[in-house]
Amino acid sequence: MSILEKIKNLAKENSANTVKLRRHLHENPELSFCEFETAQYIAAELRAIGIEPQEGVAGTGLVALIKGKNPEKRVVALRADIDALPIVEQNDVSYKSKNEGVMHACGHDVHTASLLGVARILYALKDEFEGTIKLIFQPAEEKAPGGASVMIAEGVLENPNVNAIIGQHVAPNIPVGKIGFREGMYMASTDEVYIKIIGKGGHGAAPHQSIDPILVASHIIVALQQIISRNRNPAFPSVLTFGKFIAEGATNIIPNEVYIEGTFRCMDENWRAEGLEKIQKMAEGMAEAMGAKCEFWIVKGYPFLQNDPNLTKQMKAYASEYVGAENIVNLDLWMGGEDFAFYSQKVDACFYRLGTRNEEQGITSGVHTPTFNIDENSLEIGPGLMAYMAMRNLENS
Image (cartoon, rainbow, N blue to C red):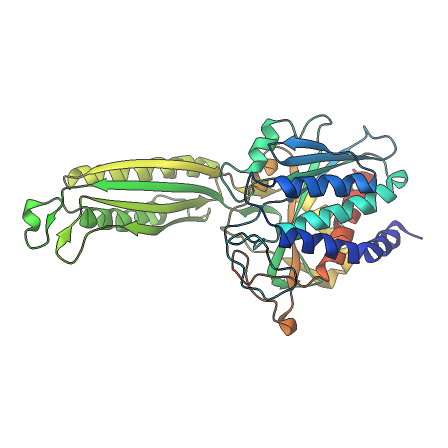
């Protein structure tokens, strides 16, 4: 029996257990850096397989090794994120979240259950591959500075040194059974921009006696878009969006200040630094020119995510062997952010998408929505596919 057949059989045999794991995790979601019970659950499941994890990495993260023959030959890391989102779930399912206001609305329960399924498969086959598989259960993907950056700082890519890393993410826009890949730049850097415009409030009927921060802020928001349209190299996508504007005045009251929040995203680290500098200078300069004051600060987020072309081509070929070439989807650039990007800046990385959509069953909601759910058939495909790609990489690198 071939390795492909063995892995498919193990994935099928374990699929009911993987569904059970995912449902337990979905029922018991925890927010970023607070995944205490989740971490204990993962550790217990690993030990039940026969794998002893390292706990407390980046607070609530775990790392575990599955050593094959000649374990020093090559190390491939497989990553799953474990945190949930502050969303009130609206799904009417038996495994609905028990933690009010917290929900696995981005599929991290799927990623975690899937990686536990991978662990079970690869542990059973550890005598049939050379090298080491490093399992990374990472906290706080949803919260800056991102659990990935903390785990890297604590040495997750060392001892033993990682040669390549693979990450999987649910794709509610891709039908179950299909897998998405993209070589090169894939997802955007994500920085948060906060601006306070301080003027002088007064009566709406006497604007000449005030410095209207609403007018100043409005001019700034409009003007900042020219940085994207006229300063950015059009070869590199970039987005500047302001989603929060607070001006607590009234129909006849000019407030003293306005508060704005936005996001700046791009696919080039040089432009990222240059763009943020230009945004700050323009906001401060325009406010001063109009008689107001600008307080400006940035929360640095994740870098852009770069899929190593050679590794991704290889993973795409292995996925074609596993699910069939007709089930491989080419992904578009996506301006969303992912802290897996931190790993991609350090080692060869491949971040791919696992189809979870089923229109016939009404499973169509996007991530970060209160009705997000998956076709659980993906919980047989996901573990088997990742295990197969990891083993094939060890074999052919």
